[in-house]
Image (tube, rainbow, N blue to C red; front, side):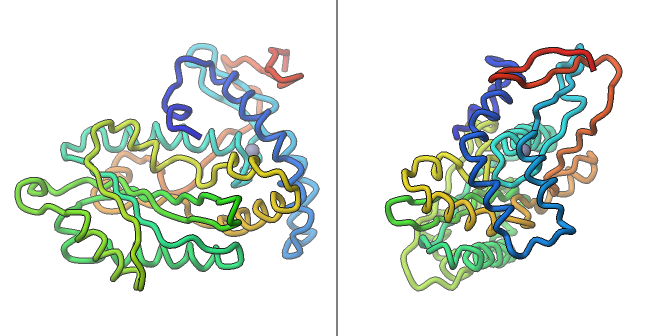
Length: 304
Ligand SMILES: [Zn+2]
């Protein structure tokens, strides 16, 4: 998925975008359904049938505000791999992050930290390891001297040929006022810090670059944790299903994004919730809203 899908809100209406994502979801639906129904850790209390039903009906009814065009009511399934919900989450977070950092008068850098690809059975522990290592690197005195705040996103790509997973993190950091005058973190030093923090015994790819386009950089950290296209590209059903299960379990109940330092503080001051995956639409007849139902590939307006 490209970043423009998140940023570009003008070329298509929200309904066209959601309809596109629903079509996408329908292609992966059988696999997501199977993930729920075959999950032995789920109990009757988890109401599997209801969850499957929510998945199928995700965003099929929408209410939009007459003037602002914003969603005033909808039912989202909130499955971590649902293309509709992920699109919704990313766009919402993108706008929120933009609002939080807009008055922050510092430079920003985009940092990427990775580890070696791993097999599906080790994905969970590898993600744990990356996130713990990230905590260690940001606790370093020198890191704190360079950077005063961060937003961290998690992304996992899937290599079909090798059947391995590549978890990595993208971090948008706000620099200290002295950063470009005194402190300057070159890529070799960053790699050294990361190798120490993650206790790695191999060479690893890292990246650090100055942010020129802030909108695009924000999209990089709020984008989907998993590219569904990576899974859908595969031909073999069995491998698709296995990859879907592995990814679904690895990111369930996990904080996909976190913030720290002055960015976290600003979000708190502005009362903007960046920590949770909030899909807070409720479903009831709203004032000044139109009601749309998804049918045969597009939304049509109906009476509520
Ligand atoms: Zn959904």
